[in-house]
Image (tube, rainbow, N blue to C red):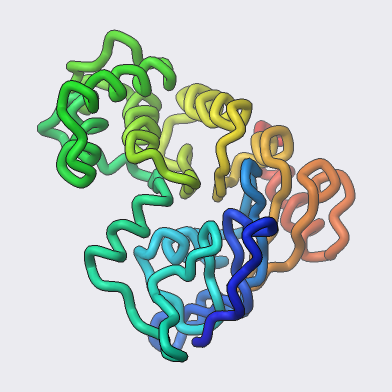
Length: 270
């Protein structure tokens, strides 16, 4: 895996993948993914389960290593440095610093059960970034207010609904001040009546101009909020287009078939 030449600063995308490949044993999960996400863009990824969507996000956040191709976040080669004509893996400290540039929101909230909402949000800045606690707590309250949880700072996860827990997770990701927010099917673990409150939080972040990559099965959300949407299947990028265009007039037969099938079985997502 040899990185391409340095990208000129004036054209640096938030994410750039070139022929990205990833396998687990003999199973090739990502089969030559090439795409670009622009700064300030909300980029949606849809597709059937097992198509490689979540694996792609995990590669962006260095939770998985790639086996081939190039992957850049804000012009920085993910997981490696290219020095003296050779590829060098990042040290654990360098990898942690790089990972902080992307904030990950998982399907299941992964909150610390023994910590309050506020402590879940401030732990990262205090422990990892050495932010003074008084400063971290003030910012934590601001972020919890931003996601609609004002006054719930001292609640424990068990005292919160699933939608509220996911919004704590969003605030926690934002507390690390990442350049890019990554959402891995953020509503899939929620009861249907709780989905809208989480989607509205993400909509607000989109209105604020944050760069986001969102893996989702919520088609109406992807159509209305995302700037562009990619359809993946069997580890390949089948089609990528502006959201309105992809949903109104998909060019690839497989994309049309997927949208028709999902819409017919889940009319509420249309």
